[in-house]
Amino acid sequence: MKSRNVSEVYRKDMHSKRSDPYLDDKQHPEPTICTQCGIIYHKGMWWDDFDRQQLPKDKELYRVVCPACRRIMDKNPAGYLYVTDSEFVRGHEKEIEHLISNEAVQAKSEHPLQRIMTWEKLSPKWEITTTSDHLAVRLGKALNSAFKGDFEIKFADDQKLTRVYWERKS
Image (cartoon, rainbow, N blue to C red; front, side, top):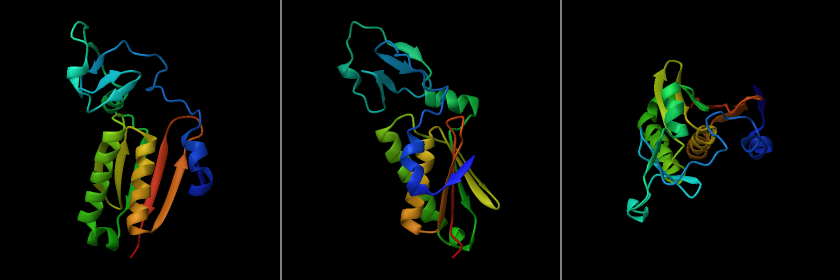
């Protein structure tokens, strides 16, 4: 993995053609529902807040497992956020937890395939895995914006995998 300055490469790397086997190019028949989480695929996009009353009554709902649920089932994250445990983190643990949770809820409302998979508080760091590399970056940027500190993003060269590191000593 390469480590580079965030501002220089963020847009280029986040939108590069690194392969993601969970996001296939094929269009699903419409309407399609995820059998695990219930999101709806309609007009080429996944929707979390889709009004099912808008679905044609005469059409059968196709059933699949969405890309995010497949990642979760396979335990194969696209993003990692590492929060280094420190005196600052322990002193602001609840605020940090709320910020991460709220940011993840907001992200999912905008992009239903972006979710937190796991959240483990391991010493000497927390590890949060996500179904999307974009979500890991978004969470790290939110932490850095709210609390400052040291922030680094590492992109894998050959696959859709991003590791985000954030720490603040004091």
